[in-house]
Length: 196
Image (tube, helix red, strand yellow):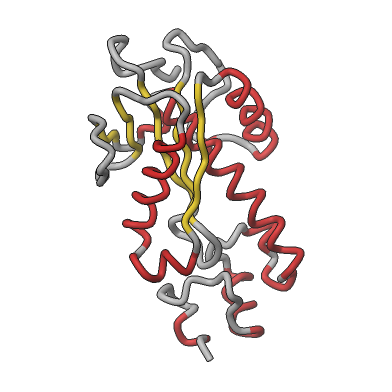
Protein backbone atom coordinates (compact mmCIF):
# COMPACT_ATOMS: atom_id res chain seq x y z
CA UNK A 1 0.00 0.00 0.00
CA UNK A 2 1.43 3.36 -1.03
CA UNK A 3 1.75 6.24 1.41
CA UNK A 4 -0.76 9.08 0.89
CA UNK A 5 1.77 11.81 1.72
CA UNK A 6 5.18 12.65 3.15
CA UNK A 7 3.70 15.20 5.55
CA UNK A 8 0.19 16.49 6.22
CA UNK A 9 1.60 19.99 6.81
CA UNK A 10 2.23 20.88 3.16
CA UNK A 11 0.53 20.89 -0.21
CA UNK A 12 2.59 18.17 -1.89
CA UNK A 13 3.11 17.58 -5.59
CA UNK A 14 4.51 14.26 -6.76
CA UNK A 15 6.71 14.45 -9.87
CA UNK A 16 8.01 11.81 -12.26
CA UNK A 17 9.14 11.45 -15.85
CA UNK A 18 8.84 8.87 -18.63
CA UNK A 19 10.98 8.12 -21.66
CA UNK A 20 14.53 8.77 -20.49
CA UNK A 21 15.85 5.55 -21.99
CA UNK A 22 14.13 5.87 -25.36
CA UNK A 23 15.91 6.29 -28.68
CA UNK A 24 13.16 8.50 -30.10
CA UNK A 25 10.56 11.00 -29.03
CA UNK A 26 10.30 13.51 -26.19
CA UNK A 27 10.73 12.94 -22.48
CA UNK A 28 7.45 13.57 -20.63
CA UNK A 29 6.97 14.60 -17.01
CA UNK A 30 3.96 15.04 -14.77
CA UNK A 31 3.23 16.79 -11.49
CA UNK A 32 0.22 15.76 -9.40
CA UNK A 33 -1.35 17.14 -6.24
CA UNK A 34 -3.73 14.63 -4.66
CA UNK A 35 -6.12 15.15 -1.73
CA UNK A 36 -4.19 14.53 1.51
CA UNK A 37 -6.48 11.62 2.45
CA UNK A 38 -6.57 10.11 -1.05
CA UNK A 39 -7.17 6.39 -1.36
CA UNK A 40 -6.82 4.13 -4.38
CA UNK A 41 -6.00 0.45 -3.90
CA UNK A 42 -4.88 -0.05 -7.54
CA UNK A 43 -2.54 2.95 -7.70
CA UNK A 44 1.09 1.87 -8.01
CA UNK A 45 4.34 2.47 -9.88
CA UNK A 46 3.35 2.64 -13.56
CA UNK A 47 5.92 -0.04 -14.45
CA UNK A 48 4.04 -2.55 -12.28
CA UNK A 49 0.72 -1.99 -14.05
CA UNK A 50 -0.76 -3.15 -17.34
CA UNK A 51 -1.67 -0.73 -20.13
CA UNK A 52 -5.34 -1.22 -19.28
CA UNK A 53 -4.75 -0.44 -15.59
CA UNK A 54 -2.66 2.64 -16.41
CA UNK A 55 -5.27 4.04 -18.78
CA UNK A 56 -8.05 3.45 -16.25
CA UNK A 57 -6.00 5.11 -13.50
CA UNK A 58 -5.16 8.06 -15.74
CA UNK A 59 -8.86 8.96 -15.92
CA UNK A 60 -9.27 8.50 -12.17
CA UNK A 61 -6.21 10.61 -11.36
CA UNK A 62 -7.31 13.40 -13.68
CA UNK A 63 -10.76 13.38 -12.05
CA UNK A 64 -9.59 13.13 -8.43
CA UNK A 65 -6.44 15.28 -8.40
CA UNK A 66 -6.59 18.74 -6.86
CA UNK A 67 -4.26 19.78 -9.68
CA UNK A 68 -2.15 18.04 -12.30
CA UNK A 69 0.00 19.01 -15.26
CA UNK A 70 1.91 17.13 -17.94
CA UNK A 71 4.78 18.58 -19.96
CA UNK A 72 7.43 17.40 -22.40
CA UNK A 73 10.82 18.26 -23.85
CA UNK A 74 11.55 17.35 -27.48
CA UNK A 75 14.20 15.00 -28.80
CA UNK A 76 15.98 18.02 -30.35
CA UNK A 77 16.29 19.71 -26.96
CA UNK A 78 17.32 16.42 -25.34
CA UNK A 79 20.24 16.28 -27.79
CA UNK A 80 21.14 19.89 -26.97
CA UNK A 81 21.05 19.79 -23.15
CA UNK A 82 21.26 16.00 -22.43
CA UNK A 83 18.57 13.73 -21.07
CA UNK A 84 19.15 14.44 -17.37
CA UNK A 85 18.72 18.19 -17.82
CA UNK A 86 15.80 17.60 -20.18
CA UNK A 87 14.10 15.47 -17.51
CA UNK A 88 14.59 18.23 -14.94
CA UNK A 89 13.24 20.79 -17.42
CA UNK A 90 10.15 18.71 -18.19
CA UNK A 91 9.42 18.29 -14.47
CA UNK A 92 9.92 21.99 -13.80
CA UNK A 93 7.57 22.88 -16.66
CA UNK A 94 4.89 20.55 -15.29
CA UNK A 95 5.27 21.91 -11.75
CA UNK A 96 5.02 25.50 -13.03
CA UNK A 97 1.78 24.64 -14.86
CA UNK A 98 -0.02 23.43 -11.72
CA UNK A 99 -3.02 25.63 -10.94
CA UNK A 100 -2.28 25.36 -7.22
CA UNK A 101 1.24 26.12 -6.01
CA UNK A 102 2.88 23.19 -4.26
CA UNK A 103 4.64 23.75 -0.93
CA UNK A 104 6.71 20.58 -1.18
CA UNK A 105 7.81 18.56 -4.20
CA UNK A 106 8.28 14.80 -4.02
CA UNK A 107 10.65 13.93 -6.86
CA UNK A 108 11.14 10.38 -8.09
CA UNK A 109 14.86 9.64 -8.22
CA UNK A 110 18.02 10.82 -6.50
CA UNK A 111 18.65 14.20 -8.19
CA UNK A 112 16.76 17.32 -9.14
CA UNK A 113 17.47 20.93 -10.14
CA UNK A 114 14.96 23.76 -9.99
CA UNK A 115 14.69 27.53 -9.83
CA UNK A 116 11.06 27.47 -8.71
CA UNK A 117 11.90 28.20 -5.08
CA UNK A 118 9.84 25.28 -3.77
CA UNK A 119 11.37 22.85 -1.24
CA UNK A 120 11.79 19.34 -2.62
CA UNK A 121 12.62 15.83 -1.48
CA UNK A 122 14.15 13.26 -3.83
CA UNK A 123 12.86 9.74 -3.24
CA UNK A 124 14.59 6.78 -4.88
CA UNK A 125 11.90 4.51 -6.35
CA UNK A 126 9.38 7.00 -5.02
CA UNK A 127 6.77 5.88 -7.54
CA UNK A 128 6.48 2.71 -5.45
CA UNK A 129 6.28 4.62 -2.16
CA UNK A 130 4.12 7.76 -2.47
CA UNK A 131 0.73 8.01 -4.17
CA UNK A 132 1.39 11.40 -5.73
CA UNK A 133 4.63 10.21 -7.38
CA UNK A 134 2.90 7.03 -8.59
CA UNK A 135 0.10 9.16 -10.03
CA UNK A 136 2.67 11.37 -11.80
CA UNK A 137 4.43 8.29 -13.18
CA UNK A 138 1.14 7.05 -14.64
CA UNK A 139 0.28 10.36 -16.28
CA UNK A 140 3.77 10.80 -17.72
CA UNK A 141 3.80 7.25 -19.05
CA UNK A 142 0.29 7.26 -20.57
CA UNK A 143 0.67 10.68 -22.18
CA UNK A 144 4.02 9.70 -23.67
CA UNK A 145 2.73 6.32 -24.90
CA UNK A 146 -0.20 8.05 -26.58
CA UNK A 147 2.17 10.54 -28.23
CA UNK A 148 4.41 7.77 -29.59
CA UNK A 149 1.41 5.81 -30.85
CA UNK A 150 0.34 8.89 -32.83
CA UNK A 151 3.87 9.30 -34.25
CA UNK A 152 3.81 5.68 -35.39
CA UNK A 153 1.26 6.60 -38.07
CA UNK A 154 3.87 8.90 -39.61
CA UNK A 155 6.73 6.39 -39.27
CA UNK A 156 5.14 2.93 -39.10
CA UNK A 157 8.31 0.91 -39.79
CA UNK A 158 9.77 1.69 -36.32
CA UNK A 159 6.72 0.08 -34.64
CA UNK A 160 6.51 2.85 -32.02
CA UNK A 161 2.93 1.90 -31.28
CA UNK A 162 4.42 -1.19 -29.65
CA UNK A 163 7.92 -0.25 -28.42
CA UNK A 164 7.15 3.45 -27.69
CA UNK A 165 10.65 4.38 -28.86
CA UNK A 166 12.55 2.16 -26.44
CA UNK A 167 15.67 0.35 -27.75
CA UNK A 168 14.10 -3.01 -28.55
CA UNK A 169 15.86 -5.36 -30.96
CA UNK A 170 13.14 -4.63 -33.53
CA UNK A 171 13.53 -0.86 -33.16
CA UNK A 172 17.33 -1.00 -33.50
CA UNK A 173 17.01 -3.20 -36.61
CA UNK A 174 14.57 -0.68 -38.14
CA UNK A 175 17.15 2.07 -37.58
CA UNK A 176 19.74 -0.04 -39.40
CA UNK A 177 17.29 -0.73 -42.24
CA UNK A 178 15.70 2.71 -42.64
CA UNK A 179 18.03 5.16 -40.91
CA UNK A 180 16.83 7.66 -38.34
CA UNK A 181 13.79 9.91 -38.36
CA UNK A 182 13.47 13.53 -37.24
CA UNK A 183 12.20 12.21 -33.90
CA UNK A 184 15.28 10.14 -33.04
CA UNK A 185 17.80 11.32 -30.44
CA UNK A 186 21.01 11.68 -32.43
CA UNK A 187 23.23 11.71 -29.34
CA UNK A 188 22.02 8.20 -28.46
CA UNK A 189 23.50 4.97 -29.74
CA UNK A 190 22.59 3.46 -32.18
CA UNK A 191 21.26 6.66 -33.72
CA UNK A 192 24.67 8.38 -34.09
CA UNK A 193 25.97 6.22 -36.95
CA UNK A 194 22.74 6.75 -38.89
CA UNK A 195 22.95 10.53 -39.10
CA UNK A 196 23.42 11.15 -42.84
